[in-house]
Each structure stands twice: as structure tokens, then as C-alpha cells.
Amino acid sequence: MDDQDVLDEVSRAARQAAATGTVASYIPALARVDPAAFGFAIAPAPAADPGPVRGTGDWRVPFSIQSLSKVFALALVLAADGDTLWQRVGKEPSGSPFNSLAQLERERGIPRNPFVNAGALVVTDRLQSLTGDASGALREFLRAESGNPALDFDPRIARSERRHGHRNAALAHLLADHGKLANPVRTVLYHYTQQCSIAMTCQDLALATCLFARHGIRADATRLLTRSEAKRINAVMLVGGTYDAAGEFAHRVGLPAKSGVGGGIIAVVPGRCGLCAWGPALDDHGNSVAGITALDAFTTLTGWSVF
Ligand code: DON
Image (tube, rainbow, N blue to C red; front, top):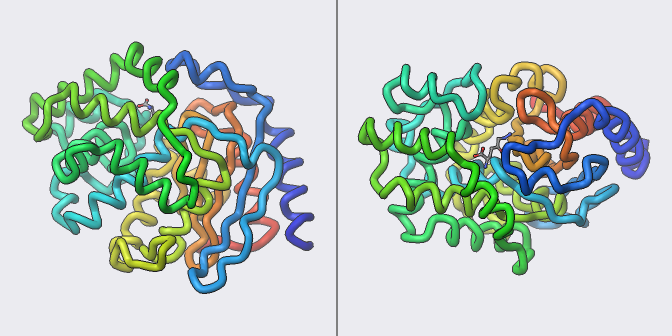
């Protein structure tokens, strides 16, 4: 099978599956996307001779990255803080929904992992302390890694999430009550909502994801993460990147990956490539139905997985 055959087959399988999902509506502005949209992109990782990004469908259409932002925020904080970060946030699968208040309260303000919303709020809090402008720093970083200097926040999505983000506000207040935030709750919520509102294409995201496929080497060939830090991020993606469906995802796809309620999923084939699949219709866990199906088909057809 050549590359185009793989892309065609991935697209066929994903479009068929998408009909069973539902577009996220708890952030009302997210519900305005076309549920039938689908894109998939592969960015080769080798820094020396990366070759062109390949894609299919709506792979150059921007969408809301939402929780995909959490992986890149984690990379920036881990690069600055090293292993001390893991004193504030765990590295275990959550086994609970991504916005669970009960789990955070039970575990006394130490989020299970950096990808549940509570964990991401802690990471954003730390990024804010490090940079003074967490979401701005993340936007600059994503511009550099994707090679797209025009990517930006989507103010309509950010406004909508701010207006309806009662659960995240509750999580942030709970963290503050446990003494786990260094910055004011409203500052942390502002930057978290901004970072989630960033709009990127599958092409942008596949390129940015190469950071993790290159074991911590940036697009400009400088090192951001040690090999061991990059390994840790990939490991946490494997066990928690798709929340309480991480076992099922690992079973079907076999790659470190992170999902977002905008319908994107990024995935890492270490040493080989960064991947991004996008389809806005989600399953009950908040993961893209088309995205999972596409990545499942991709690893099955190519044999590329970490196992
Ligand atoms: O905080 C939220 O609920 C959203 N901004 C992001 C959640 C998300 O993407 C979960 N991923 N599947």
C-alpha cells in the first residue's frame, strides 16, 4: 500500500464512523462546526530531512485545539522545572471524566495527571509564574513548532467557554482552597481558556507534535526536553491522553496521544512522525469518533505503533 492508499483508507473508515458521535455543546461555540468535517495529517519527524507533510480531507482547516494545548503547556513547564513538577500533579490514569470535581477533592488537590482539567490548570498556573503570560507564551511556542506565524486565539470560543465554564471555575477554586495555585484563580482561568481557544489545522498540529516524536528536539533543531522528559510526556499521554478511555485507545491504536473536545487527536510515532486527526463528533468520553477510527486504521495499515 502506498501513502495515498493509506490516507484514502483512513479517511474512508473515519468518515463512516463519525455518524455515531455528537459534537461538544457544553461550550456552545464549539457546536457550530460541521460535524461531518474530517482531516488527517502526517508530519515526518527526522530533523535533518523531514520531507513534506501529507494529509487528506480538511487537514488545512483550523479548529479549536482545546485540550491538545495541555501537552504543549506541559512540555514548556517540564523543560523549565524538570521532575519537581510531579510533586504538584500525578501521572496515573484518571479512570474518571476529564472535569471530575469529586476525584480532585478526594485526592486533596493533587490532580491525577496533567491532562485532566484540574491537572492542566496546575500546569497553566506554573507556566504563568514562569512567563507572566502563559497563553501568550504557548501561542508563540506553537507558532514556532508548526511554522505557522498566523495561528491565534479564537476570541469567540474563548468568550463562550468563559461564559459557561462553571465546572473549571469550581476546579480552580478547589485547587486554590487546597493551596495549590500560586496565581489568582481568575488569572489561571483566563490563560487556560485562552490556550484552549487556539485554532490550528491538522497540518500545524502534526508538525508541532513532532517535538515528541523527535524525543524533545524542537523544529529549529534545538533541544527543549531531555530524552527522559520526552519519554515521560509520551508515557503520560499513553495512560491519560484520552482520559477514562485511555485503555481502549491504547488497545485500538497503540500510540501516545492526546484528544480535545474540538475533535482533534494528536498522536506520536516515536522517531517517525507526528500525526493529527480531526473530526468534531465525539464519543461519551469526549474523544473524536472519527479521530480514533482514523488512527486505528492508520496503525493497523502501517504497523506503526509503540508495541
Ligand atoms: O476545559 C474544558 O472543558 C475544555 N476547554 C477542554 C476540555 C477537553 O478538550 C477535553 N478533551 N477531550
